[in-house]
Image (cartoon, rainbow, N blue to C red; front, side, top):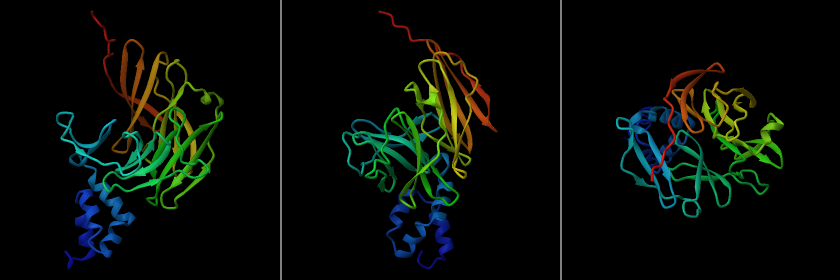
Amino acid sequence: MADLPIETIFEILTRVPAKVVGRSRSVCKEWYALLSTRDFIRVHCSRSLVSSNQRVLLIDDLTCSVHPIIFQSYDYGPSSIVTLPFDHQNNDVSILSHLNGLLCVCLNHTNELLLWNPTTTAFKRLSTPDSLGIYINNLDAVGLYADDADDYKVLHIKHRCGVYESYVYSRELNFWRNIPFLTRQEYLSPNFYWSPGTFCGGTLYFTLCECWVGGTNVVICFDINSEQFKEISFPPVPSTGFVQGVLVNVKNELHMFATTGWFEITIDLWTLKEDYWIKVLSCPPIPPISLSL
């Protein structure tokens, strides 16, 4: 391939698996420079978004493994073991957000945030001496996104001492900065639960649910261009009993699996159209589990 034009090499390597790309970076300085450009990363990610390339990463107490997804049978294929490259205790790692194969994770024994690429094993610690990049479970929220310049960024919403603050980390600049956050006193209640951030159409979306007491449910939106927050309504579901919204980006459209109920659980699928939710699918109620002795 040494005699091929660089444009042809670009077209070939953007179509090969990520592991091959990782190995190809060591071929020569020219290839290393090519495979490190934003254009290459962007094109390779877009061409990898096909069903046959989808993988799921599972972390439990003993192992970390990657499985191919078998869409025909709704199952996982044979696993391959992944070695965690950072300090950890019994795989005590939580995945908080993901985008294009890049993960934002938390080391639960130190509460540190990291960016990690499981394919290349490269990782970056995001914590600082003044406690930025420190994540507290059940209080904070994290979302991963890419801006128009293909700079990967982390939005960290922190709940400390009865106050919400928000920070954005830039991978390119290796720097945290504070941005204004909308403040509502009622959201400071410990009854509220934040979902992980889901990136879709230039916006990060979070659900904020008063899960166990049948209270307020809302969707928090973060526009990555204006860096401003706003609220939109939750789908019109019953607010009594348990409520949870799981957000999913499907072909750049935001969907929500809304789970409601108490003794009988109902799961509905909604899609967002211009800040309004439209019901796509309603599943029959799931009856409670009965035990017979």
